[in-house]
Length: 200
Image (cartoon, rainbow, N blue to C red; front, side, top):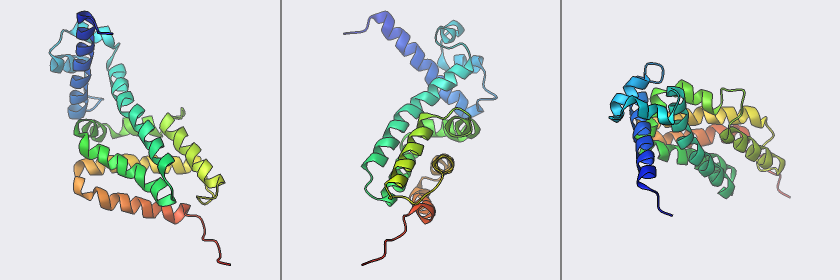
């Protein structure tokens, strides 16, 4: 079913506001940015902003959701496809590094607003889908004997914290990503790799 001209305009206006908001938040940071800054960058009337968002918090939340929802899905799929502990740890980190290299606009948003993204991903009393999916997968692999026993909640928080650092460092220095991913795999393998079974 084709969208009407009015629906197309509404969708285009909302997208223009979000693109402008991402640019403004990436340049000024969430704390310094104002709705007026976003409206000015969008080229739309101020009333257009309030047709879609009540305040800059809602606009920022929409940008975070646009990053988190597909990323959570892709990270879960990468772990599901993993056949080894190295792949379970490494493939999600490679995916995150690729995101930082290929989506420079969203990576810049994360770099400038690291504290808010850390709060979103792991510094909040409400567990996000990214956290709970990782905790569940860590727990399942542990119960199956494919990872050493550990606290999946604490491990998920540590992995997510270093995942955000990986986005930031890769955005600032893309060539460093492979070495950083390899380091993180070695770091977590030292704690999580199951003990080798004695040969018969």
